[in-house]
Image (cartoon, rainbow, N blue to C red; front, side, top):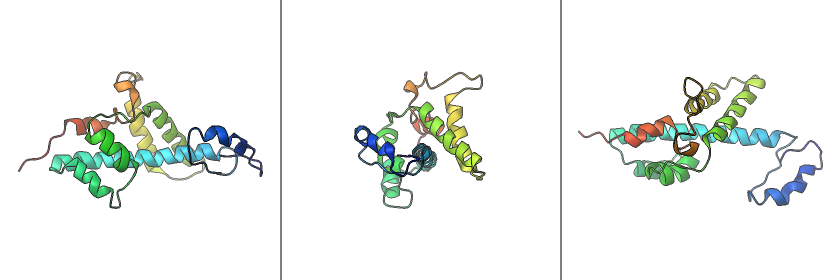
Length: 171
């Protein structure tokens, strides 16, 4: 929760917010909670893209994607996607996390814009945002997410389109 007052008046909203999350943090001044949410979703989006790229390459090479996730989850590649979304939505090929791509893209854009406003060179944030934004709009500006599985961020990721069709290499 962000709040400009030293007394954190926003903390009075804690009982309401607890209905949405058991973990609540005081992040600093007003707006800092919003920034933290966007930055967190940017990190999650970057990890999601990296995980999907690795799963496509590994599967095409002949690796079992479930085994890949098992290895990542006890190694340096561990992240929310490898732990939760990967096994439940990607490897199973259900491709539905329940998080709308448009909202995810908005948060990543906010994080990228924040870096720009602060004069920080953060090219990965812009690459991740622009990659998701391409999924949201086609070249004529038509929103695609309404036509693809309700617009779930997992269902419309371009790497997952490849994953859905990739077959293991056979030597």
